[in-house]
Length: 142
Image (tube, rainbow, N blue to C red; front, side, top):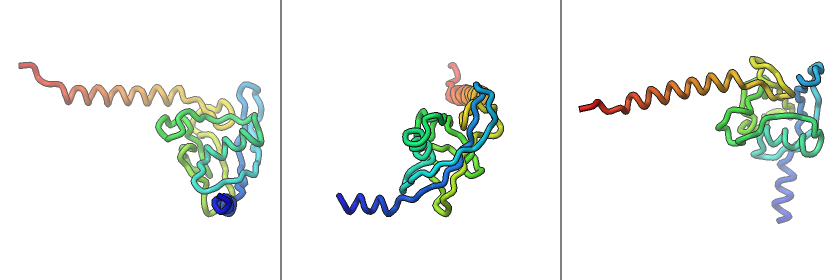
């Protein structure tokens, strides 16, 4: 057990996390807060956000429903690229991690954005695909 603990400690590094902050309800100006977060192999950006929330700053907000990349609710920009934070790993070539909300959506708080239009579009697309599938499986009446 001691060897496993030593291996984990050796593989852990400190990330310099820069997190976009905004609260629409308070009409506050957006800004960035910075945190030092230990991260080990296999930890996702979601794990980084959870560490910040649980250990450093209980005021941060982020969307974390499914945690397996199926609901697409945790879309955010990670180092400038659109990613699902629940499945995205921090970069291995840098200790810097920038987390921002999607820029094409209305911001609600921190990295949480308004998904109402996105959800309705996804639901419409899904309904159209379901209708097309059912129509292709329909048996002609004899």
